Length: 111
Image (cartoon, rainbow, N blue to C red; front, side):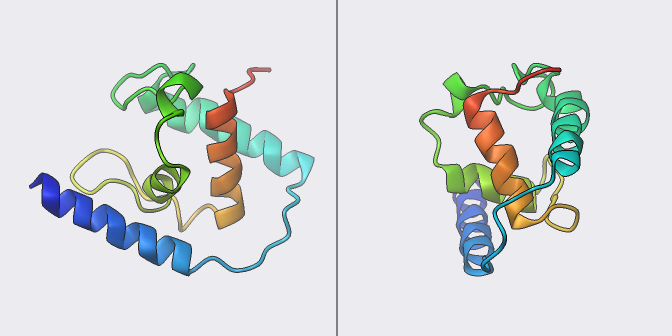
């Protein structure tokens, strides 16, 4: 079963990275605020408001430092089948997912 999950993750990673197109790297201040709220509220509802874990695993910089960014990006984009982790690729752009991953690796700043 673990091998099947790993194969699915690599397929998702291939599809996700293969679909990347050139985008403007600038997000508006309003969108950054919205994405920060999404992280704290939506992601925080499973991963904990401070990302220290809950229903979902911890997503702190310490936990993520040895995990490949592409793995985290793919997980956000396509979710994890068989778990409560939903896919966000229909709601978020690649650029927005990248912003979320950067924020997770750097630590969330609570306002």
